[in-house]
Length: 72
Image 1 (cartoon, rainbow, N blue to C red):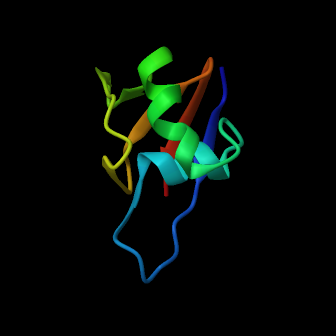
Image 2 (cartoon, rainbow, N blue to C red):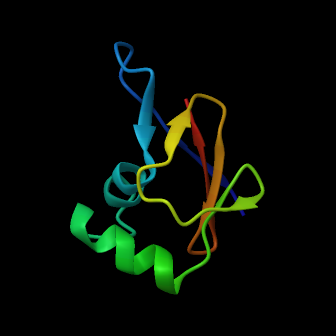
């Protein structure tokens, strides 16, 4: 499984998990994040995560939908 890079803007310190799910195409709207996280396993740095507002920083690794993402 290849790791896909998700780049955040230089002026941003972090993005939230619901934004990551949306920009990677896993969900189509931010409002779907709560339902998606309740029904699917998502891991941040190896730990199961169900908070859509979880802050993701550079270097964090997220696993969802049989894919792996790293924040850059």
